[in-house]
Length: 138
Image (cartoon, rainbow, N blue to C red; front, side, top):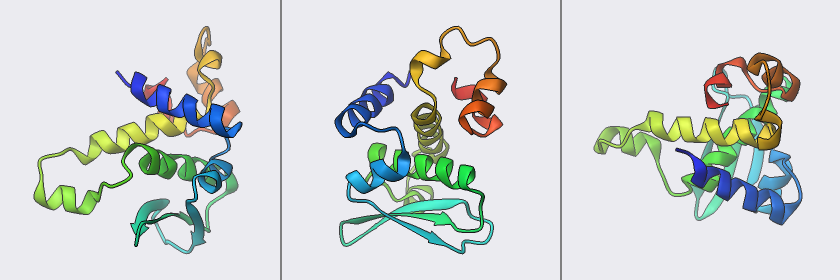
């Protein structure tokens, strides 16, 4: 179902030699900003063709790292989408976009070969610092 995401992701990892979302964002010319965002984990946007990932500075590092991975997913998979516009003016599902970004983030953290043969998804998620809610993407 999401094989095309694996393909994009693997090409990105191979090209830049890392799975680290902060390093990948830097390599792609995406500016990562840490800000006080109250109850928002983060978001992705572009201004004058400059890409930004905004991350809540109040979160723990693991949460920031996963948030960066999720927003990087948007930058790679949906670079020109404006979700508030989509919600107001189209029938395109924002939840589909969010699921794709969550899938991207989960698999950026967990190498595909680690998933095969795993006996418990929860332990795998915990080991790689991925939120338990992402279990459905394994």
